[in-house]
Image (cartoon, rainbow, N blue to C red; front, side, top):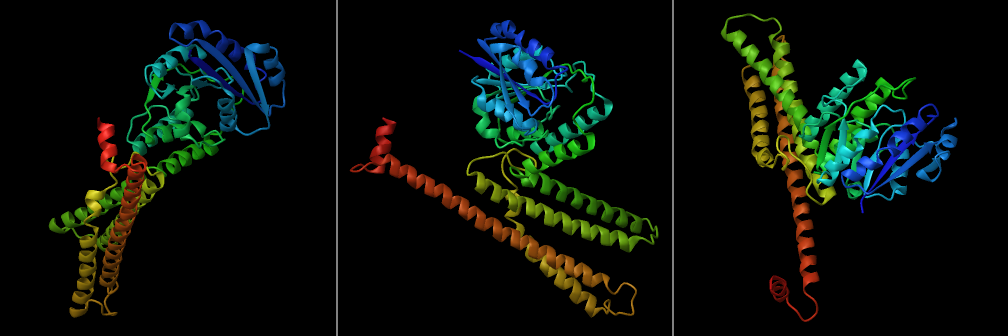
Length: 414
């Protein structure tokens, strides 16, 4: 028997709570046609100061009312999930902006194997979303797609159906309005099967509780910080690679101008900017690859990582850090030695500072590369020991008193 528990978080929604509850209850026959045997409707009154709770009580046993002190949007949903009895958990807002009539479609996708089904307001169905919020949601969805490596159109949709079994993978989640983008980010990095289905969206009447600036920044921070706990190289490495490419572009433009005989009075500032960007890019990239080892060691299980692919954190590149670092140090020392030999560090010269700065940047880059390589080797060794320790414990578990490991394995194989 499959039950869908629909959680409706409500805070001062006396004008619309009755309508949305009636619409949720009315979809029970349609749910039965897709294989959902029963519907449980839960309203979490999140500290309302109006008649929201009294209106919900008027539905009697058809609706379960939970009252709590104000914990926020995410806090109300988590309270509802904890109290729900269904194998499938659904939720939507209390202001009738999301269509409960689409719950059967979302449930069908969940029963077909999806862990989380998102009702996407950005996938082509009719939407009354204001332009500012549409642009913001597009930005957040694009950001999540970039950091997770999976295309998603609506990272913050407030109508979803998920399997109860997915909760341990996506928790912890915030109590605030960034509950949904945090859920999307964690689900994608956990490798859950996330499916999007288009739904229409209706703009709420009255004033929205969402602040475009404050909550927009909170959404951005939630996506980035959650992604960093899974795949740091995707962000650090991506920004570092962008800085390196910018440095190469500046250097190429300078070289082309020199070959074309074009005199540029800003040549030195351009070259200096290229050097600084290149060093910053190397530092960020190495930080990302090293940080990924720490994250993988913390999770103690495979998680989605990699700058371009779904697995790996740049190990094919980082194994060369040690000799690249030594080369950068030697180049830095050589640059300073050559400048001193040709008297280019003479204080009387207008750019006597330039060669020492280039030398220092190269040496510091080399030290960063060697340090990153050393730390990565240590973290890789710790990870290897952890794997070996688990393997040894598994052998012990398979070898009871009087039986050797090989005999136990043979019996299992038989």
